[in-house]
Length: 330
Length: 307
Image (cartoon, rainbow over all chains, first blue to last red; front, side, top):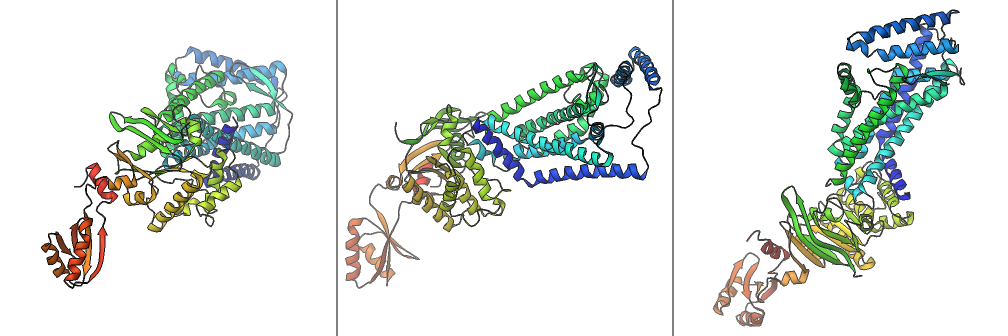
């Protein structure tokens, strides 16, 4: 085991000695600083209010929207339009939220708390995709890059099993991902806190689990959202990782993984709208935070279902990747 | 336990339907430098790749310091230091970082050992530069340095002199000789350049079309096809034409070439030649024996390539 940890530290060293690793971290930092600053600048220059007025009759309004939502749900379920059926998840979510509000007498907040702002910006700016992109690049460098640079043979002829070498590379990539994730979170938190205040640190928020509402600390919700984001990132990293091990080509691994991340998943989602088996395809439901933020976007899929499907595919992919790498002549 | 550092047992590699190498059996003793000789595509690299675990063994087995590559891969690899094909190291790192990284793999390789190895290969000046700035010779030396870090029993070098200039080749030869005599290191070198092997190795194995043709010491190999003690002597005198005529007169075949009279004779008749010529008043300026058997000739004969 001590030996394996050494191997991870070796892969980690290789990763950080590459100039691109540091450059990518800097790019991430610059983007986050720019995004928060531009947002602040826009809000100030356009006099956008960061507070909303909560009317005295919020309970009646919420009750009304619950009834409207329920009627809408009935209508959609009765209809045959498959396109609108994928909206069911979102309506279900808002109905459940309003119901919960009315039942437990939770008045909407006039100003979003710091955690809510961090989560919202993370989702709207798509930092998960950005981190996935950077990780795909560094993962393919670590695996496929070693083939093209010829250094893989320097690693294989060592007292390690091939599977250990490959696993160490995956772990080093994931560790780098954690660095990017934590950087993203901290910078967002600090910048948004400075610009709009650190209000509501101990606030509670509702979280939609695809079947019910749970009322948890907002900090925990943010943690869950970032965690789910990271799981989504790992799904794509594993794809890049496995393609690197199989194809030995950085361009194939990077290109195909990025295509899946940026366009392929959406195309497959369209399939899932029209065919009920579509939800079983890989990457269709891998936007995990979507289930929390907007509700289920694929008819018949829940967060738990999405996590299980992605886990199964990732395991299958890994199995193929390890198998090929194990048998291959280098 | 015997002192075989490397043992190949009926090694065979099949890719698809093609048999790349077959029936490769070898034993290397401690401290010897073994040359693995063969033309391009004979199966040298394939054999080496099977030894170091880069290629899967189809049949047979490899033992390194008694550990089977098939069953105790980690044990076998601890005994090996190698460069396969090119000395590909991490170009974006300095030489020192490369060595530090590889040193982590093995227990007991400390900073002092790293410095020692750097000194052995004489890379002290450039060790903190990035590897991408290195010349090929420097990369070879860094490659040897990383292979020596953990003081392996066996050093495997695949075509180590490729791309080196004559001075570099000489340096490497001396380095390997020194290592094997001082530390008992066993060296396994592949090459297609015969002259190098002749000067570097104790024993040579010749591989051709995937099979080992012969394994012999350099001397044995040189004497192999010498059936009698006929030799060609290059004779230089102040009057080559007259000498040639005289020699023909005593039934010694000869021919005049640019560098002198080439005389084909046996050892016993050399004094006769000298007396005949001096008696006729010809001054002999020099007599050189031409090597009839270079490794090159033996090799060509064995592999059936060329005449």
